[in-house]
Picture 1 (cartoon, one colour):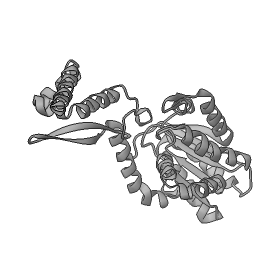
Picture 2 (cartoon, helix red, strand yellow; picture 1 turned 60 degrees about the vertical axis):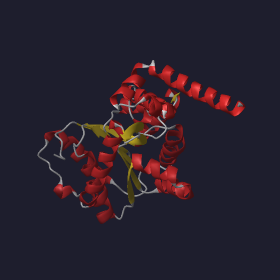
Picture 3 (cartoon, helix red, strand yellow; picture 1 turned 30 degrees about the vertical axis):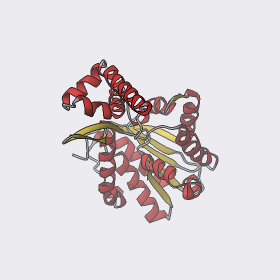
Picture 4 (tube, helix red, strand yellow; picture 1 turned 45 degrees about the horizontal axis):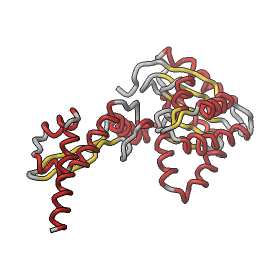
Length: 294
């Protein structure tokens, strides 16, 4: 008898919790949209509530770096299959955009490895100043010389990465210069996922003759990535006077604002420290041009 009472009490509490959640407009809309009956709703009450909370997080989210959900760049959402609810994670608009960018980077790889000065389109007057600077860097470069790299920012698809690859390929082919060009958001993920090679990779990026950090500012900011990875690499390269290049869709000021916003943290001082290192390492130039990828 006591067990029966306990079971009835538990069932009553579950029903009460469900009815309380139905007072929430978003929760009720979800239940109504999927035509979830009372018994199915009670059984899945907790998961349905999680869906509502994650959907709200997405409404106020500014980017992957600001994601508050359990699975980065995804939100929980139910699908009704017969008499059951199947819960799965759906990528948000920022995750879809990032995945598309990664696919484009892979398809660009061959073209970038073959980039050269002779294949640069010189008809676009908006790129003349940058091209001139790159050729002057090539002519003047000597291993061991104290030369600044370039922080090249500007419009999406303006050919920033291709231009710098052309310089680096020419230096490697004709002057034997070792360089490493890394797609910065992906490298951060790789370093985080593979601790066995973390130390060796950071040391290599800190010491290679020339380093290109491609698409900085597109990454999800974390204190670890900003301070332990980026800060360490830049400090080492600054101490050794090693040329370092960056491409970004953000200006230096916009990058500083981006780096200040780590998940659950706002740290302007550490972001400023990174920016000062970038300024010590580079010349700041901009390209505003037509999208070369179209």
